[in-house]
Image (cartoon, rainbow, N blue to C red; front, side):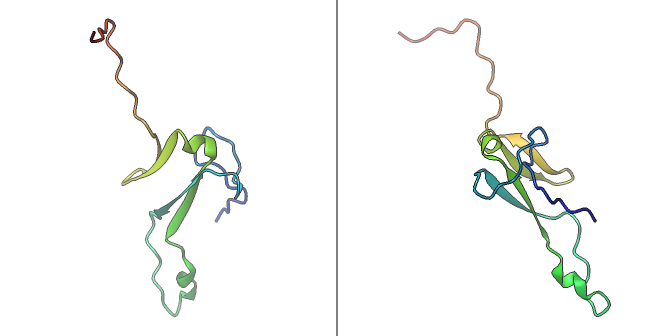
Length: 94
C-alpha cells in the first residue's frame, strides 16, 4: 500500500501541493473497490473508508471540475464546454 504523503492537485498537469488554507475545491467520491467483509477473522475491515478525496487547487478549480464516470473512475472536465465557432460573417441587428 502506497500512502500519498504530499497530496497535490488532482489535475495531472498541475504541481500545486495541497494546503488547507490555500483555497480550491475538495471532492468526495465513492471508492471503486468493494468493502471487505467484516468478520471475526478480519476485524480491520471496520476501519476501511469507502470514500476517496480529491482536491483541485484554486487556479484549476476555476477552470475544471471532477466527475465520476462509471468504468473510467474520476475524470477532469472543463467547467465550460468549448463554444461553437462563430460564423465568419456575422451581421448584427440594426
